[in-house]
Length: 605
Image 1 (spheres, rainbow, N blue to C red):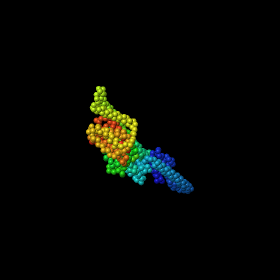
Image 2 (image 1 turned 90 degrees about the vertical axis):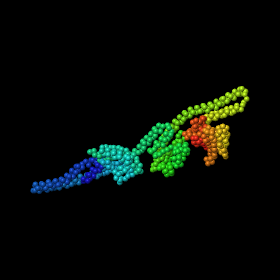
Image 3 (image 1 turned 120 degrees about the horizontal axis):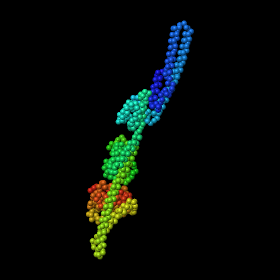
Image 4 (image 1 turned 60 degrees about the horizontal axis):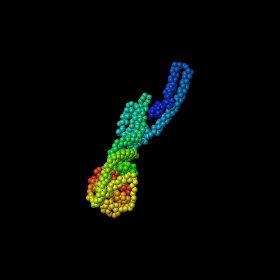
């Protein structure tokens, strides 16, 4: 009997303490009112046991005092017997009632326990129960699914081995304080999952106390907050990146910052590649990596990101990287290059890293566009001033000379003088100056037409070598006067469909440029037919001043030149590029300062 009551009380104590009573369970007495009469049952049972004994002792005492009262004695014995039989029936009834009460109590407690387990196992949170001293007793199914552990393992080990070593002292400190204050507490920490990866959780421990305030159990819930924390960190990263990028308008500074800012949050190493620079140092260092890159796709903006794995790349394996991600930098003027980010071994570019690096690349692109626009505005203002100064000088000089010569001829004609050979030379000089002026005006007209997109080509079948020869003849006198030899050895004809006038204009501008900056040294002209590509290619090479590296990207822009002390409007190379592109071709330059320059034009037939 004592065992039954003890089991009931122990079950009641355990189940009512699994959660807050007001939230999960009432006490057993509150749910089953019959249990409140347990003391009465005990009293009645003792009465049924002791009453016959007391009655028998009373009869014996009566016989001792009144030995001759036979009939009265018999009556007492019969009464005692009937009383004992009645009490036995009462006892049997009480025991039956008590057994029913115990069975119903146990069933109710079992249902309550199943209800709690079902509730705890149906929520995504990790639920745990610890005793009053903080020793873990029980976990829900979500805990075992996440950690990969099993109920057969010791609860204490279950609790400890999943905590990150760096955060475990904090967890112990929170628990120690909670045990001392007997108050609810919260803490955030990472837990290791069955895949070996850590995710951050928000843990809340609630004490369950008895009537005296003693803590019976601790009920804890761990809520996965990894997604929310990642979102906050990503937003903070982009916010800081935006602030940093917008704080500078220097193109190179932005490039430098963008290489290192995502490290080490989303990558272990980063660099920038400028695909416009054929001798890029970064390209040389990454030669093994870049063999797999299709730069035409990057130039045309056909890819957003390219991921290369170490399994197929020697550069990554040799440098201890597992993967590389390449993000194109697409500026307003076209593709500038790409960001290259690498991860160390046993890491991979997951969807979060790709998404964040893509957004970061877009932020950098916007910042670079702003910096380039700022630089363009500054250069435009400076170019405008330079253009006004140079144009005034260049247009005024031939007009002044022409005006003087014309005035002299007019005076001679008015005086009726015979025309002397010198006058003829003066007339030739006037013609040359008029041609220069006409050329300058023609360039200004061409640039206007190019700017508004009205350049029209009149294609005819012609020989490239013939046009080069014709232009060389025109520059023969000028080259001879400067003591410059134009080396040109025509071979087999190269025939294609070109605008003859525009083609000769391209050749003329390049030869004129070589004479101007060739430093009086020979000019070499070469031409060849590219049979595989079905293209024609010719080049004009001088051995003069050369072009500084910082200026090579700008020389094909309007009003730009390769030398700060150069004369001219700075339109020749710009017009060359525009006319070459109109033909579907391209123009390139290779130059070393002090060694000369080589301009190469490639045209489809």
